[in-house]
Amino acid sequence: MKTLYVFCEGATEQGFCRQVLAPHLAGFGFLHVPAVKVAFSRKKGVIQRGGVRSYKPLRDDILNTIKSRADKDVFFTTMIDLYGLPRNFPDKTQNTRNPAKPTPYVQALEKAFAKDIGHSRFVPHLQLHEYETLLFSDPVAFEVAFVDCTSAIAALKAIADSFPTIEHINDGKITAPSKRIIDILPFYGKRKAIAGPDIAELIGMAVLRQKCPHFNAWVTHLESL
Image (cartoon, rainbow, N blue to C red; front, side, top):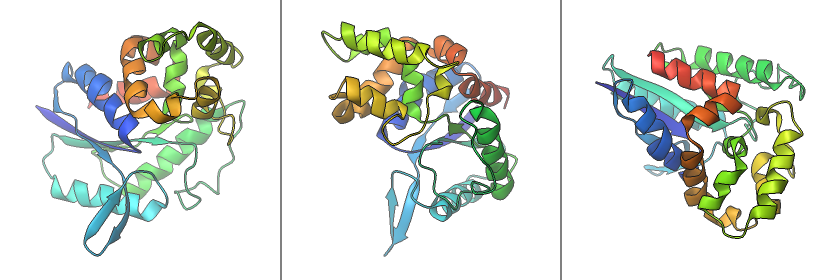
């Protein structure tokens, strides 16, 4: 049986991995799918985790974990937001994002990420543009976390329908997916670690993959390992 380590931004992504990704991958031979918050510093013998503030701590964390888990059936991946990546991320300054066609940009950064880590058991994934994109796959699922939210659901649907795909929802400071959700449902900001995974679980992997092609490509790759 196989193991997949998922380096992710925070508690919301950890919940998604536990509630949605791990049960799905169990059908593809993955017995264990630990979701680990990425390291952002190491000081006085203590590792601080949660969020990508600079590339080097993330890189060191991944490489150290790969080195300590040498079994051929142990794999490694990431679930990190494209939104807010540090400037020193591999090839970020060498590539330009086209809002109308975001996929080539994220693929270029993932390719550079894979090259820099340089290990066959590592599968990089950058989420277009952040975790909350997934929740626009079916806004009706917000009912699992919020009451009397009919008008909010309609507003979220209108946003999703205004883009070619929900992965086109941009990464502006006030227009990123999470910012749009919080603007409509302010309580999401305080409950995202619980509500985010619950909503995605209710939506289901099939719909998430249908609505998010780049996300689907990642899951497909993981299934093939």
